[in-house]
Structures are given as C-alpha cells and as structure tokens.
Image 1 (cartoon, rainbow, N blue to C red):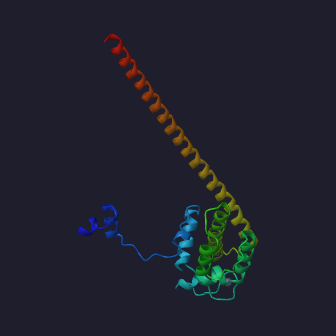
Image 2 (cartoon, protein in one colour):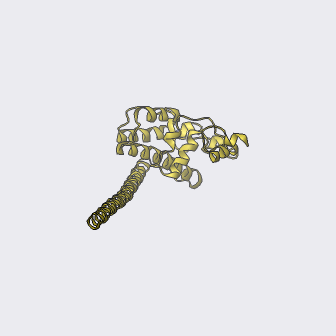
Image 3 (cartoon, rainbow, N blue to C red):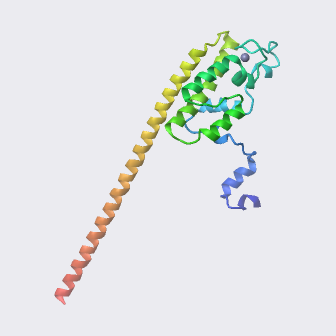
Length: 220
Ligand SMILES: [Zn+2]
C-alpha cells in the first residue's frame, strides 16, 4: 500500500497503476490515438500496428491462405495492407490525393513517415490522418466482405468510399471545433459579466463609504 502514496503522482493514479501496470511506450501511440480519428478506425489501426488483424494466415480453420485480392501470395497483415499489388494501386492513388511523396511498404514505415514528415494539427494534416485510417478500415471491411460474402473489391469504389468518409468526418470535426469555440465564447462572456458586476459593486461600495464619511464630517 505504501507505493500508492509514493512519488509525485496522485494517490488514485498510483493505485490504478498498481492494478493496471503500464506496458512499454510505443512510438506510434500518439499517431493511432489522434482525437480526430474515428474510434472504430483507430481500433483497426491499433490491431494492424500489433499485426493482430485476422488475415487467413492467422486462421487455423481456413485451408486456402491465398490473398483474396491478388490471388498470388499468402495473406498476412503486411501483405494485405502494403505488399499486395491491388493494395499498392490503392496506396498510390491515396498518396497522390493526399500529396504524400514517400513510398509506404509496411506499417512501421507508415508510422515513421507520418511521425517525421506529417506532424501537426493543421486541417491538411487532419485530413491526411482521417484518410489513412479510413482507408485501412475500408480495405479491411472490403477484405471481410470478400472472405465471407464473396464480393470482389473494386479499388476505385474503395477510394471513393474513403473520400466520402473523410469528407463526413472532416465536417464532423469542424462542427465539433465550432461547438467548442462557442462554448468557450459563452464561458468568457459570462466571466466578463461577473467581473464587470464585481467592479460595479466595488464602486458602489466605495461611493457609499465616501457618502457615510462625508455625512459624519458634516454632523461632527
Ligand atoms: Zn494480395
């Protein structure tokens, strides 16, 4: 129990750490958990970062391990998202659209490029992150539809769906920012009103004190 009250952290934070010890920090955490990325997109991106998406190479009960998209090589997280010829075509279109000049051949390379060359919180950066996370999600969705429903994915339709997704998410982020700015503006106006009221009360108090002082001088 002594460790709950040791160090600079608050006691509750230490107690939480006692039951849920922190794992080693990973360099990509701040990229995956960016607030503008939709939760379900973040989750798939997080699984991909760990290489844990259930591609057929990870399914013991599936005999045919060949990639659904290219029908050439065995499927894996790395192949499906970065090495497959079909995915590479999609990546090239997405990179062109997002004005990303660097080649992306693995999840590590993707995080390295984003972390080094595409940092920041500008609108352009947000759209890049929305697009990439959305693309990975939509590609995974297309893979699952191909696996379970036999629907062959169309790259141009995937790209269009990603762009529409990003447009809607971007609008949502913008609306959130406007709401936040409005809430802050209301709070600031209320604070200014309170300060003005306090100043006015203080002036009134001084005026009355002076008035009482004047009266006392007159009657004495
Ligand atoms: Zn393939």
